[in-house]
Length: 205
Image (cartoon, rainbow, N blue to C red; front, side, top):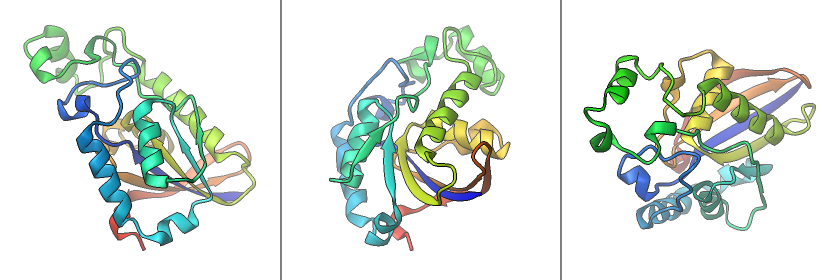
């Protein structure tokens, strides 16, 4: 049995995030100027004690995740995991509330509390499955105690945590540059979350 501590950090802001658009798998935006400044400002306040415990750093392949990892972790080696991409939002991709307001398809989805499938979108169970596969790749040797950091997308974080805890998917909505931590136990096959919480990286102790 091994113990793994995993920090999940959502990437910084893109112009699509600022405009509150559904920015998913097919919209590979870089960080915007505000997103870069916010990530750099966060980096300047994260104490050395956080970085000292991190054994490995991973990120998803999309530009916004890679740029955020580079800013937050500097010259540390960062391994890219292809499965850690955002969900495909299908019909909603690239649109925001102003674009979708009055659209019966959107209203039906809202009325379902986000539970109905989005036309043309990736199924939630598929997002969760790929996110968990990405997590398993990051965990690596399941018999080794380790502390890792993963820079990825809101959908990945929601998917992993809802799967491992049994909580509602939307319970784990995470803002740009926010961090969540999970303590996991692994036996080479199964992964069990023993604790999970939000983390304020600025006040890390």
